[in-house]
Length: 418
Ligand code: GLU
Image (cartoon, rainbow, N blue to C red; front, side, top):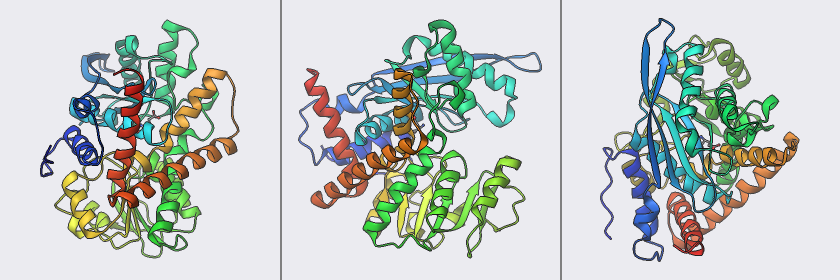
């Protein structure tokens, strides 16, 4: 099979499948396997009906996609965003399959989403959407079937409504959803896990790239759950976080942003608007800034063929899912900028989701120290496997990660008799 020329206009699902094909070239997959492994297993589209605060009845499109369940129950977050569509959810579900395989946790890949703009919804309306969505996908989720979790614009509070709704039909079953508040079965360390994982992976990647973390200039695009924790941990490791951004814009301070101050500011003001510890910059300026480590931690497809050539970072660690388009990925590869791919770099979230699920199944709680220690062990091991394989095959970290993940899922599918 000849690899197509990647373009920025590829949709997210085509992008993931391009990365798949690129990696599959190095593997000896049986005929039919590539198609089977790229395809989604099950796709559900639902109508989420909500009575708005003004009395009107509204419908929002909801999705749940099961990509591959060879390695265990389907697993993946639910996002609330106005750009959610079937292709994006398919792509994100596929990424979950490869992500779980890379860190060797016993799950397959899934994803869900509701096409809505949470900033225009009241708390009551959000709760209605969350509960109604769960009622609509109730038949295909469950602790041994498919376990949702938070993603863009969803959090522990949303997971609490969702697990409560699931429990109404099935009885007390905290393992049906992860990322819950600790008081109702959530795990210590889960909220911080994705950002913490990004920092663990960045430590290893910096070492391999010869970047000294002490004083390293870091740019974090996105200051939500992933970006704010990644910035916090990298700051604590001695890095100088020189720029951050969120929906209100970009903020730059060459001397280093006071991250604890920015943290408190965002939690008090919802976003960074009005933060006075830095100068305003545009999103484009932020991505193209001279720095040691760039962490895109917001949405997909922000580094494209239009700006990839101007990226000056020495290392990119993907906190978000799919922030680099395949066309940009090729440019970065040619420029020699290592990219630590999403399926490895942000796998900390689903890894601690696995710990949460395992604790729920045993009705037993772990200390935060144990959570973080186990997380580090898993991510360090996965990082070195991907890096060693990349060196051995002279491929990028992304191609290497996909190679290992695809190989693992193909092996398990064979064992199951496919
Ligand atoms: N939404 C997160 C991700 O993309 C976490 C998924 C989970 O914990 O299941 O990895």
